[in-house]
Length: 285
Length: 310
Ligand SMILES: Nc1ncnc2c1ncn2[C@@H]1O[C@H](COP(=O)(O)OP(=O)(O)OP(=O)(O)O)[C@@H](O)[C@H]1O
Ligand SMILES: [Mg+2]
Image (tube, rainbow over all chains, first blue to last red):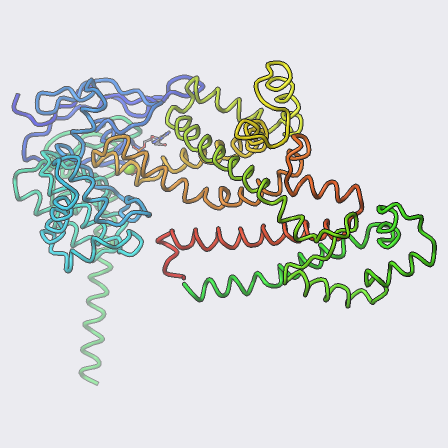
């Protein structure tokens, strides 16, 4: 099989006192090596749960069924230890909230180095060297100093870049970016998007990209999956899904986003126009 | 850092004054004439003249504030006067004689508390809702619900009387520590197991734990991060167990005939030995304030997020 990740009939249920509650059901997709898939859907539609189920990161209380074949390994039946060794090394995750994704009591360098030590089986000193190189590769100034800082001493954008640097150093086959820009201001969002495009263009790494930002989505992905209340309602090539959505929900989701975007653009355009006029008047007066 | 410590020290001064005032005034509120008591405990039949003489001797004829200031000044020099029951002994000497026994009992109990509650809490949080976790939670429930004097008698009956394994009381080597230290630490073990377990479960919900797993860290390394963060927030409570164990030995020392300050204080209360009671109350108050101060400063020092405000 040539596909990198094939997911078939993925169901996630939560055991509760009143019986099992299905949170995600019937997710099917295929990700080619070097491909990029976007997941769209309203808040609470099960996007994050789907990704965490694939990575074996759902806690006890959740039951996952279906199939998830990754490089000829069946992920859902992998022993927990083997699955954990795959995390970070082969399948990596970039989190939504950079500010709360690091242990507040440990310096960044220690957290990066411990990751490298486990995956690359190197000494502490070598792992710190690798961490420094990882930050330098992200064009972060003075990486040696950044490594000695605590998470609260860094900005969200900086931490997000640290996370991306950490992720890319291990050269995973698949990166899952779960709303990586939601918690950032727009300038930083742009910076992070540039990094994601760079990952994408390297061609080595496949990407699953979760976002509410259709513009960012169009920039990155070649296939798209739309979720609604835990079910997959649409899946196909990105152009087809964005331009001719078939299901009612996908159409609704994409049209409201497009409307918002065009209204924003119109507003921004009008502002720009007004500013120009004012500038003219002032120049004239 | 220095400014933070200085401001905390300054803020402790009025508290210390308040505690000293309470220690002094509470005892003088007891409805008995200390002069008469001082005579009676030495088996002298008090006559009005003798009482008057004794008052002068003890300085009780002077105004209240004058007495308080003098007592406070002397206390600062660790001079708490002489015991009423035994004129040849100073209160400071009595306290100094009994303090090592109390401190060593509290020390052993603290080892029990830390040594039992952290492993139990970690194991319990890791195996949430398992049979083990439920057993621990049941024990914690009984541990907090049962009064320690009752447990003490039960333990004496079972281990000392019925099985004749351990001494019933006194201080005769390490075996006599087991029962009193167990009864003293039981309540605290239960409290901290519950506190640390619940804190760990809350910390496990934090995004950084999910990210630690997503990075592929083995579960042992993840638990290390969780434990570090949980202990950080349980540190205040754990630190305050030190004065609580020292002051809490009051009951346990009497049951096990432990030669510590708690027992000294109880016999002083029976004998109306005012200077001893005042010194004990003052000592415990100061202990609590000082420990609270130290715990605050230490937890500010080891929390990187708070180092900026120091
Ligand atoms: N630990 C949990 N316990 C119980 N229910 C959960 C848990 N995590 C998620 N859920 C439920 O599962 C559903 C899907 O959650 P999920 O986090 O996958 O949503 P999402 O699509 O990622 O939303 P968002 O865009 O807000 O991140 C939600 O309804 C949520 O309430
Ligand atoms: Mg989500």
